[in-house]
Image (tube, rainbow, N blue to C red):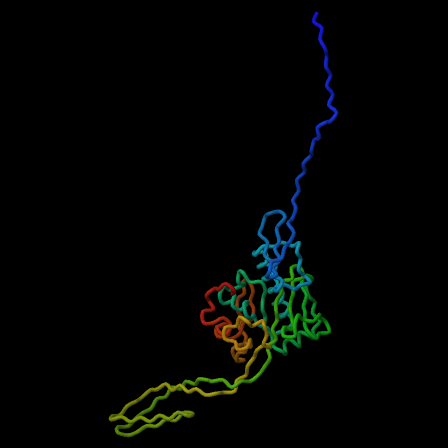
Length: 299
């Protein structure tokens, strides 16, 4: 029989079993040196737009709400549709302006990278709106300066704004004021003169005189263009920083002849019929230059 020693080993320090759990943690929003707030989708399913604080109504900025460029387009587009229906239903005259008008001509709708919408409105129409107690859809708020029904707009030079309360996106409403200016105006006149042989024919139009002599009987057709200063009805908003990109504005004053705006014309904004200025191309040329149909980095 073999005899041996049995050694009993006892572990006094039991190994620790770690239970790992996984969870998704959102990265805290951060703000760049231009005021843009950067968000991260906690699910990692989409790229969040940068929240540009200068293009959002501050009190409605939600740094926990991540939405994509496509979703922003939908928000703005739906906001414009809602605004148009509200104004049309209550007989408030307006027209799409600035970048929104540019989108109508260039894209038949919203410019893909636009971050707001712009509306022009006359002083009379704004005053009518100011004193109408409208029922505003739940997701929106209307701001109008000096109104008994709405909170004041953001600035004295920007007296009204229609805001999407969920995101802070907005439609700026520019009040166009009437004035008069002396503008050079061209007049084209087509003249037909019958001239007898060896005799002179005369024609006088405004400050232009024409004298023609022929050796034989002739019929002469002429186009006479005259330029003179004419008092012209004008419309334009108060000069402000809002017009810093205006291509042909002097001292940030955007002003156009009244007949460039009226009569308003129906035009297409995506799936909606909206109102546009009567001479939209001339209007946009003042704002963005002759090549306004060519996309740029800023518009």
